[in-house]
Image (cartoon, rainbow, N blue to C red; front, side, top):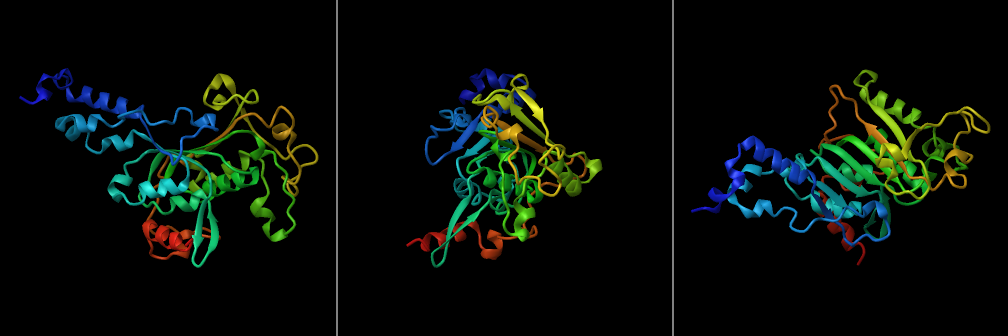
Length: 319
């Protein structure tokens, strides 16, 4: 006799079993890290538990009842965009469309174009290679210089799809306080900081419509060096910037450091920017033929190619 008939689990109503399955996989993290992270405290809990998906292999009946639904509950962690594409790009679109939670480090994707030209791509372009992706929550762990992190987040907010909620977490507050002196007027608007979250809130309202009620908020740890502070209401506070007060103005904002975010004992405070797409009639699924990004776009550089083909071409270029 099949062991399933002796299991207490299968003597409960299906609705109860389904709730158990959901609870189990909602607390599961599948890590696809190329190396074990040791220098980033934000990653301390992002280790894949041993035999995380064992239930799928334990019993044929449980496997049949769970089917592909576990994909909608598990958190997938990737330590760089390359590993994200390597794992997700080859899977069937039907399965890709079921994934709801992803966490990834916000490093650039470095590709070597033929013959031997190195090109960096930000995360927003990486996600364009995953059509049908429609995440409930995308968590990005900030990495790199303040300017790079700001630009990456700015592009995700302006041009990113595939997510309903975006959480961007930075080690410190420098992303909202660094100074940038633009020498080329044609590039100033692209790189200068703007008062946040006011500016990003306006961007989301233009994208999704004011009456769809998108939202942007900034949460900051109350003390420097307290990793994880932004996840707890009692250890964080809501922050906002404005044009008011010298030396800032609407014309030169971002050309001077913001002492509230970058001065001694302030820069070391953890930061989280939380963005939610509009709640009414907003389609956030990544489309197969979505418009090219302004500037560099992997799809424009490799028309009609899959990620597997792009990776193969760029690998050959390194020989």
